[in-house]
Amino acid sequence: MSAPLFLFYVFAALAVVSALGMVLNVRNTVAAAMSLVVTMVSLAGIYVLLAAYLVAAIQIMVYGGAIVVLFLFVVMLLNLHSDEFLPARQRWLKFAGALLGVFLLVEGLRVLGGFHEPPPLPEGFGGYRQLGLSLYTDYLLIVEVISLLLTAAIVGALILAKREID
Amino acid sequence: MVPIDHVIGLSALLFVIGLVGVMTRRNLIVMLMSIELMLNAVNLAFVGFNRLWPQGPSGVGEASLDGQIFVLTVISVAAAEVAVGLGIVISMFRNRDSVNIDDVSLLRW
Image 1 (spheres, helix red, strand yellow):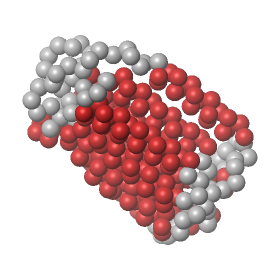
Image 2: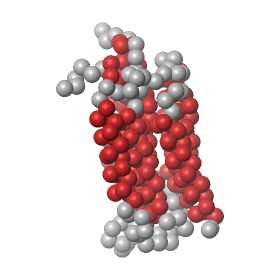
Image 3: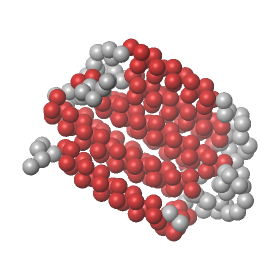
Image 4: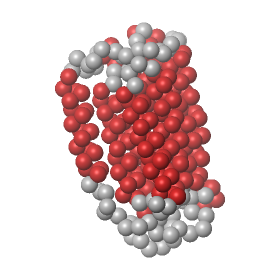
């Protein structure tokens, strides 16, 4: 087994175990958020193995840094260190969730073994230079739309979290 | 060389874990985290397919980074979604003193 393949399985196992730890942790919300960090960082490792270097860096910065810190901030602000609620009244909802999960999992696992070997890549694939050139020439409209979306999100979050709107 | 079918399998697995989390948990913050997990699973599929077909489905021409551009877009949308979602969580906690979604079932049938 080559080194990248071994690393891929290590990161994949880490991601799955910590994702399960996040969903199944019913006692400690802070620990669930920390499990989410482990998942994000392992996914960044897999991105590096798939030649998506800039995306891996942004994954660590935005997900591992900003988003999970925001979650932790809100959990600690609301003082939710240990809470889990009674099971849902709608038992069928849980059943439907599990059923849909198994169905999607079977569908996903059907693709196993169906793809050819990934082709060799040109020099600089996935680096900041090529991605930046692509982002600011062919996909400039997406950048502009995202800037508008982020502005709207900032205003929306401020309005929602404000104590009262006068 | 990483086999892409295993990457897609991992992506499906993570998506299912996130989906079960959204469907079964009652804590609104954990539900938002599960949604983040599902978005990450989709990102992983995008990166994997971009590695498998760098020239797009036609297989000719020079390598492009369309899949990774999609991933950057999804990350931005996820950041916006978390900002608004946590604003809703704080507003709900202020009004109901709880983050249990069973306490805000006014619009449910």
